[in-house]
Image (cartoon, rainbow, N blue to C red; front, side, top):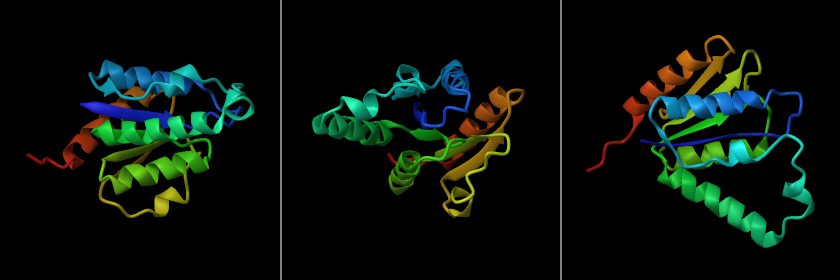
Length: 149
């Protein structure tokens, strides 16, 4: 199964290593990743705004949309609030993808908690239960997948 995983790198107070841990846990569970952007960027990466051309932005946007379309399940880390992440969550739900929203401890995505969609799962995690939570939500999402033949 293919998984699209991303989150916002804009909040410099958030531990970026949690993104890497989630990414690696998804792979350890045997899922194929369709997006590795989260591993290539860092919290101090200013290239997204300073040197990119319009064509770079278009290519990045199209790549994310295509990766969501390729994925069987989409996972978003939302501890840092982000319009981009919210937009991509909406794209995933519009595509009828099982969509997992993870957030660290009490950094709940309050607006997203108001979304009523059968394909959406929202879960909190901590350092101690990260592996268990990722495994559980992926299993729940597998059950929510459309099976079209």
